[in-house]
Length: 320
Image (cartoon, rainbow, N blue to C red; front, side):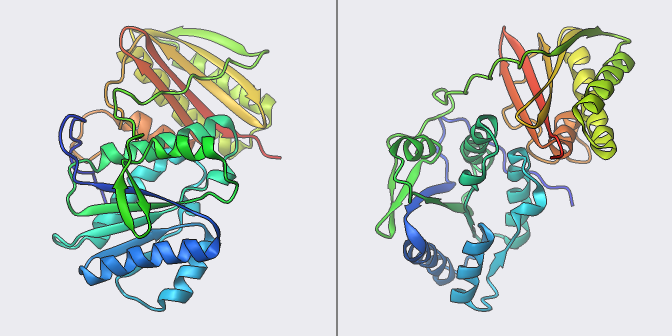
């Protein structure tokens, strides 16, 4: 099924989407907060979608029994890439929101399972993008439990910047630390890991790009199926680079921390921060390249600045 989110509102407009961060410590606090949130939904005739780690899901299942208004989904089937999560939430919540029925989501991001600094950065960006994806939705809301057992004030503060509301003592309050679009601090990409391979490309060079990536990926130890999937993603990104990035670009590849990375740089600009995050509609012109890359790679980093160009990094985990 092809789905798309409500049209995003500008940050100057009023957002009706209720996005709450719920810091908790321990099983008891997790259950008390999430069950109260579910109870509010049930009393209001709302549906609930739950996407939390398996151990937390088991606790909620035991507490709720066979409540028909509550649906549990498994985010692990999506793989490690946070770039797939917005599209998944759109589908889950539209499926449960029959007619105009409001839907509440409970989504606990696997912060402790972040594989790298880049992965952690993209997890935070996903949380912030939820506010843009559902900005005009008056029927959807989401609670994001956050395990604060480590009492890491810096980590909690960083995550809270992605949430306009914070749940405290069973109620939500406005988060003064929430960052709007103009304020969101995109984290700088790390430097390319030396030694790296580099290739400049332009019209007619797609075969050379694919060949270069194939050789480097094989040398890095990627499996044949991984190489085939990466070849499709590489073709899409390089093609976009040539068509929309000034007709040429630069490819770099390297291996770092058991991850094979393909980086594409060009002079283009991607104005839509949601590009590649939601499934393109059947009649949509363009926009499929980044969507495919998100589905085929373990992580995708996009940094695009007007008048400074675009950098896209495709990450594929090297088998251990």
